[in-house]
Length: 554
Picture 1 (tube, rainbow, N blue to C red):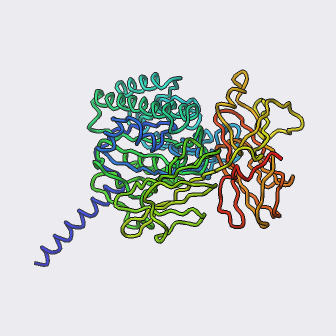
Picture 2 (picture 1 turned 180 degrees about the vertical axis):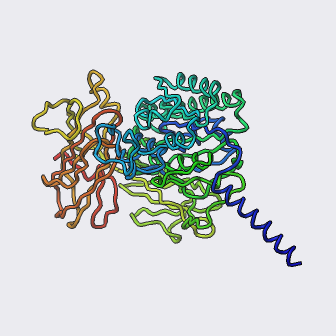
Picture 3 (picture 1 turned 90 degrees about the vertical axis):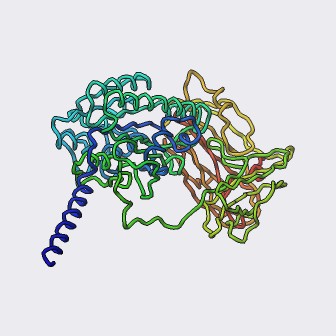
């Protein structure tokens, strides 16, 4: 009996050992990994565009809808993090200006060519004879990895030629690791705006290319042995990206094919640099200690979510306040000689939405939204959804600015055409262009576009006027801008948000007395997409867009 029990214990131990070895060495049977990277592809794009092939991958595979990117949410540092299993703090690629021979932060550890170890170089060392290839649409991707680690390295100028060559490569070489990069979705985001018809059309085009890649894998006879991963470098908001918002800094990660659970939604937190770690795990390659990424093991059959997984407090889907956000423009809107109508849509099932109109945070005791509201004055509407257990959603906020014409409201706005601005210019030394009166601190894209000459998108704008302060006290101002901006009150610099960047926010405070105060905002755009918003808060005033009814020309 004792001998039999000992045999059973030995058998159980062998099973556990084999299971442990399998988890350490990765899933069995994956002989090829194909990564499809789509620059600028957001979760919103996948959900709202026509994407039958991506939908097929999601329903037949595993998805994480909110993979967190590194910051800033720009291309170079995120593509680098994807293939390097680490963030900018480790690999040193901190912005889109990075070059191998011109950068400020060295990698924490270098390979012979000076670059941080990538999945390509790590795989090459582990399997010297492996076929490893990449085909990319954005030429800048090619500067991020060790050239001697690749069997095949090609750049093409269009998404179609990129896909055609990559499919040919798959069929002819059947790579252990193939990585393709498409750039056209990001182009559409910059040109038409994220969430625009042009953007969704580009996502649908990406989906068709993904479908062609999947067909190429099948025609190569690799389907039953291939793991396919869909990834992106960032999302976007308005006409750009680079800021620290969920729209910009969250992507969808999709896993499909050999060994992947079907219809599975990943619970564990996932970061963009986990891609390289997951590839290494899938191919049973030990990752370097310098990597901080972790393989996304729960996507594989027979593997579970981490035992120490902490998901925090449960939240439900946020409500939508209409008029909804459009591109960069905040929810709500400017209403001149009109009374805005507020509608709030509850998105979470079996839940109620509560709202406030006085700037306070919605609570379980706030009024329930049941029908449309008509506003008669400038109002910040805040709303939260609560499920039957009281779990809240993130807060939704909309800024309704109501102003009457003929009362002297507005700002004197002056346009300046410049070239390749990298910081705010000295406005006393540049030539003025057109001037007009703006109702608030905002840029009209169609109006600005008509003023640009010779396809030069570098310009500056200066807003000048007065702000009415009702109560004395400390006021905090902020600008959200792409590119740089500064805000002045009483001739004093309060906010410095200068320099080339995506939409980012900077703040500053000043003590003000009741009455009118001179206010000025200076803005410039280096090129591409642009945006400006100016906010304030103070005694009895919740943070909001500086209202048009508080701004005066004189």
